[in-house]
Length: 103
Image (cartoon, rainbow, N blue to C red; front, side, top):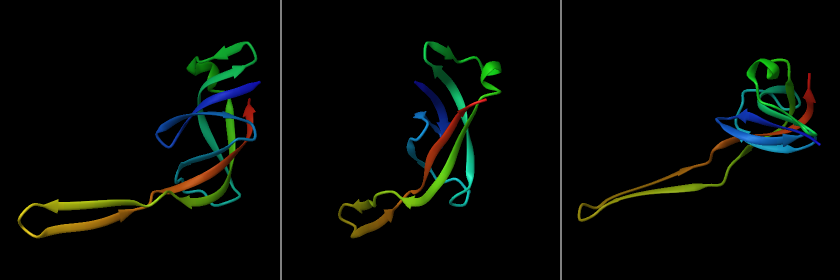
């Protein structure tokens, strides 16, 4: 089984061909391809983590859709002053499907 550890959106994710991954938003249109930076490659018994060897390895992903994360509610309250502030946030995300791992 071939899989890789890639850097995606400030985090590291374990991916294999066919996986659908949710990462922070990237400015790529839906249906286009995207290259992710591999940090580790496992091909059966062979483990590659050397940066010079990984320079030729490409992890290609196709953008499936743009999405939003769950709603997060932020409440600020100060005692005895009447100060209350309510705010919300939804993180913009991108779903990608891994299409190939290799040279």
